[in-house]
Image (cartoon, rainbow, N blue to C red; front, side, top):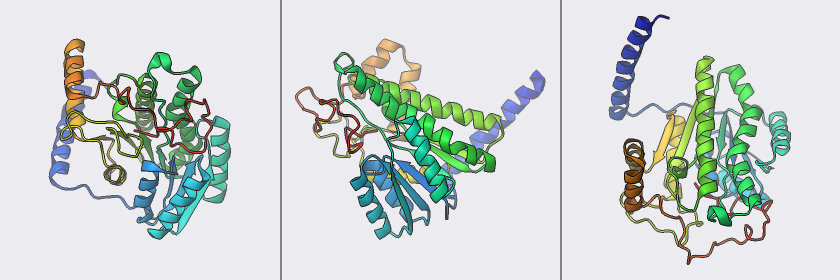
Length: 323
């Protein structure tokens, strides 16, 4: 395609997409039918993972729950059945372990079928300053928050591509968009997860697999019980998010095939400031608004001591499971 045709295509499609965006703001997007689809959620034993499972339980899907807490998954399965889910399967799986992901994925394919909606939700955070965090905890943060996405995509994406049908969901964080003092390893892992998800989305588009949708979710800090002692300077602008609100919005974003979901919407303003301002001025605004500050007050001890004991292959992703 020559330069003139490419330029014309750019102009026409830009106008079309702008009109499309305006129409979507006025007319609600029709939700896709996911009846009978197999939905896999990692980190489903508690928190947002459990709440998303409860939302999907009403939609007549087959739920596949992954976590490293057997009791947590049993409770999630029980609750989803109470909400009407008829097909619920749960598997112990440490998503940071590549061989375990591949092994359990084969078991899921054999016992349930091909996963059509994959939600990478499992996440952990050490809550330590960079120089205070042991190497083992930094490595585990990256393994759970980033590398696990590589392994689950490798396991389930080929079937989606073959059928040109599926949905990949990356539950990242506002900390994957803006650096936060005291969360160097966590921010790095979430930035990487976004970059990975975006790159795969572009690969799918380049190969014509437009039936495989992608959604990247970046919420501000969520009140999952892991944030005792955490406060927000401007609760109207940047509230600590209600987990039920987040879960409902994530499921809605999947059903309406949104490429990006930033919560709250004010995160879009912060991203615009970050992109348009020189570094010192951006940092100044960040300090004023709040997100660049440390997540926890130094006077507030971490609720869970498993990190302190270097026991990271633990019974739940509840060790500061946040987004």
